[in-house]
Length: 575
Image (cartoon, rainbow, N blue to C red):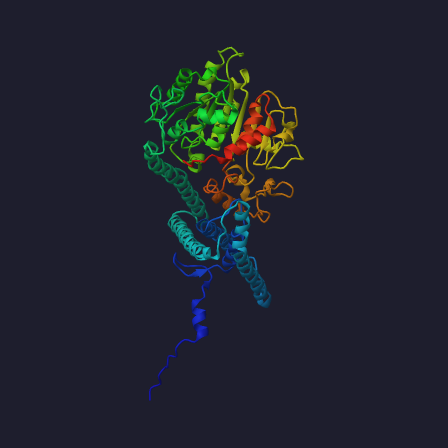
């Protein structure tokens, strides 16, 4: 009688074991074998990814943060494990190893569960601080799903890259000594990958972005009001065509306070504020646009006003009404503001792509205007100021380093939300007085440059403020100001005890790599939160800054408070 093998159905324990990922070195790209140390580190890094950063995070953003952070942890763990084995370092044997593994895995899982449980509460603490609606636990399916999806995609790409390296090593190994093949192959592949990332992919991204946003610049929306008064570019009397001003240029020249509003605020005697502008399509060259702006300033009588402001725009050509309108109210319309567009891209892309463009445009436009202004009698020409928000402040800094400014100084400058690429801002912050915090420094007793925030801080420099006054307006919660690649490996001073701003979560900490990645993903959302936080600077804060910079005669704190209250009631148009 032939014996038969009877196959019993798998037990519950066996099924559970079959669901567990195998531990070890994967043999192919889609292998479900994983590094045990990598998985443990991934759990720890997932927990770290849920900790607060500068801004509240939506579920999609949190999913991206967690997905990338998990794979950073997995990569560190798997790489450490592979290096340990390669070097032949003996592991902990027997039961001690099992105990250590249980402890580290258990702690990692506990950290992931604990931070996950606290996530919504931590985010709502920040949202409450900012006056936002609270988040609910329903964000979790989105977070977990996107985290898993992104982690899998990154893992497949990483394993694909490893397979590529191994294939090249094997091919070269048939022709070269093994170690030489590894060195040569690594060098060539890394050079190719780097050129693709920094060249083809980056340039392709900027080209696609430019093609997407350029057509939007030509659209004339229903809420754009073509000016009819001669003091504005784009009017029937203007040398600068309404159709060529660009989207943000049309909003700028068609906006601002009317003479009636100024008279109501200041008791009469107002003038029509002068606003001139040149769009990117207004002339073929930077110098051509600068010449057009100068011609418009002459045509409108700008050099007969009390104040003339050369304003550097953000990427799309945007000039913030909270930065321009308060100045016109403050001086009852006896002002002229000039702006020039240099890009079609939104600020967070322009910050990476247009640094050279903003520097060149700022210098050429300023030099063109400044050269004519400097020929006028000092007793009758307007006071000359600079203004820039975000990347525009980089343009202002490039002007302040110009030799022409040294020979014929300007009267002051306001720079709001200066980005992390601003070198002068970084030098002043690094050289601040030891008793001043990193988020709001005091430099050389405030004799020339002063820093302020939503809570007016200009008085911290004392009374000795020179004839040329520079003001940096910045929020401690603005990632565009405080992001830095150095966050990857060093803790910033603005997170230290006593130097943390009032709008930064007390629970935010620093962790290598993780904090840099979190703050980097805060950048696109810096302008999508309530006014007075992140990268949105209120009319009140700008007004207080302009009061400090321009020092209007017979002005009082009571007048500032009254005008700030009036400005707060005006609608803010997000263009």
